[in-house]
Image 1 (cartoon, helix red, strand yellow):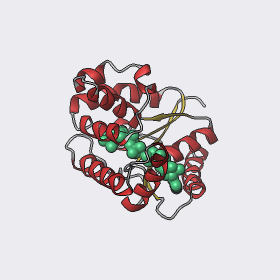
Image 2 (cartoon, rainbow, N blue to C red; image 1 turned 120 degrees about the vertical axis):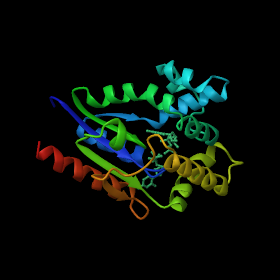
Image 3 (tube, helix red, strand yellow; image 1 turned 90 degrees about the vertical axis):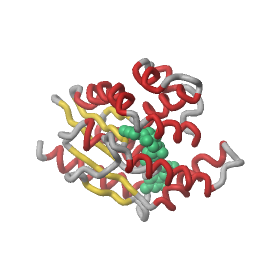
Length: 206
Ligand code: CDP
Ligand code: CDP
């Protein structure tokens, strides 16, 4: 495909953004970026003693592959650094470059369709109830962390949602022109199908 074609996927923690994003990218041969990983990598560096803005500015590809980025502690640290405007600014340029290179790109996060790529060809807002999202995240994390409780996961998800929605800079909100996909009662296959149909429709009109 010549020219850029961006699929922006936003939504709250553990809604299925990455699952849908990876499947859409595979289906259409698009590249995929989990932008939450950038914030998690900055959060992990801060937990190791770094200053947040410096950590965001010096982030390297190796920082994205360190162990432990999927833990609850790192998720919380990520959402704490994510309120800092200079941290967001330091990560924005790479995300825009990734999104607008030639060919298709899928980016999932919180502010992709609203701030990073407001002219994205497709905008999806993937969401689900906090209870369903906490259950899904608990199922993912509990095998590796037997001490983890479902209540702790729900508390993490709710605290991050509140911080992400309430912050002044690039808050989590559905873009006015986003297609809402509520996955509370959808299988992964049905959620992927809803997203794929929207992308196919837009590609056909290109
Ligand atoms: O990227 P995000 O944090 O929004 O969520 P995810 O990592 O894609 O999905 C969180 C978990 O929910 C994964 O274990 C998915 O397999 C699961 N999931 C699901 O059970 N049903 C869906 N419709 C979507 C995701
Ligand atoms: O996988 P999950 O949805 O639980 O979280 P994530 O996408 O890895 O994001 C971790 C944290 O990074 C979020 O709670 C947000 O505070 C922040 N984030 C953000 O502010 N903007 C983005 N585009 C992506 C993540």
